[in-house]
Image 1 (cartoon, rainbow, N blue to C red):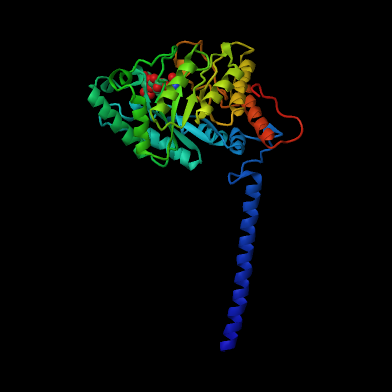
Image 2: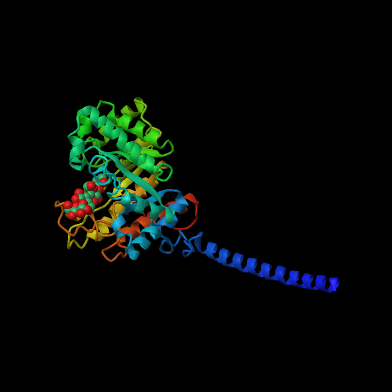
Length: 389
Ligand code: G3I
C-alpha cells in the first residue's frame, strides 16, 4: 500500500512539474512579446529611421533627455488628455498647482491636493515631475499677505514655505525651479519683487540653500524668460548665475523658457551659444516653456510654427548638457496665451490641436528627436530633416 501511494505521489509530482513548466513558458512568451514591442509599456516598436513609428517619449528615452509638458490636475479625469500626456512625455511640470499662490494662499493655509494629484499621475506613469516654482520673483504672482510682511517676517515665511513644500515632496520631485524670473520681463535688471526689495542682496542664494536643506538630492534650477530675444537679457542672466555660484548657491541648472513670438523665430546659433555658455559653468540647461503662437487664419502659420519648434528642439539636441525640453501645454484648446490679451486668439501655440491631434509642429519635434537618436547611433542612411540641426 505504501508503495502504491508513493507511485501515485510521484505521478502527481510529474504532472505538477509539467504544469508549472507550461505556466512559466507561457508567461515568458507573453512577457517577451510585450517587451519586443517596446519596453514594459508594450507600445508599438519605435524605429527612429521611421519617425512615424515613434512617440516623443520613446525617442527622448533613447536620448536620455526629459521631454515634458505642463500637467493640469483638473484635466486628469479626461482620459484622452491623460493618455496623451503619458504616451508622449516622460516628464511634466504642474502648470500652477505648486506655485506659492496655489499652495499657501494665506498664512498656514496649505493646499497640496493639486500638486499631489500631479505627482501621483507622474509616479503612476514613470514621469519625472518638476516642482514649479518655489519663489516667483514678481509681485503680481506673490500672494498679497506675503508682499505685506516685514523683512524679518518675510525671511521666516520664505524659510517655512520652502521647508514645507520641498520637504513634503522630498525624494519624489527630483528637480525644482527654485527661483522663477528674477530679472525684469523686458530688461536686464532685477525684477520688481518684494523679495528683491526686502531681503538681503544674496536672497536668491539663501533660497537655493533652503531648498537644498529640505531635499539634498533634488536638482535646483533657476528659470528665466526672454533671454533669447530681449536685448542684453541673456548676459544679465549669465552674470547673475556666476554671482550665485560665487556666493556658493547650490544651483544645478538653468531653464530658458522660450515663449516665442513667431515673427522673430529663434536664432539657432545664438541659442546653441547661450546654452553652451551655461554648460561651461558646469550647469545643466533646459528649454522649459515652449509655445509659439500663430495668427488666426495665417495659412503659413502652422509650417512656420513647426520650423520654430524644430529650431528650438534641434538647438537643444546640439548641446550635450541640454537635458530637457518642456512644452508649455499640450493642446491648443488650453493655452495661457489665449487669456493673455496680447495676441489675436486663438493662438494655437502647441504641438496638438484642440482635438488632441498632432500638428506639423509635433512632426517637426519628432523628426529632430529621431535624427538625434540616429546620429547618436551613427546610423547609416538618410537622416530626418530638423530645422535646428
Ligand atoms: O483657477 C482660477 C479660476 O478659478 C478663476 O476663475 C480664474 C479667473 O480668475 O483664474 C484661475 O486661475 C488662473 C490660473 O492660471 C489657472 O488657469 C489665474 O488667474 C492665472 O493667472 C493663471 O495663469 C498662469 C500664469 O502662469 C500665472 O500663474 C498660467 O496658467 C500659466 O501657464 C503661467 O505659466 C507661467 C510660468 O509659471 C512661468 N513662466 C511664464 C508662464 C506664463 O506666464
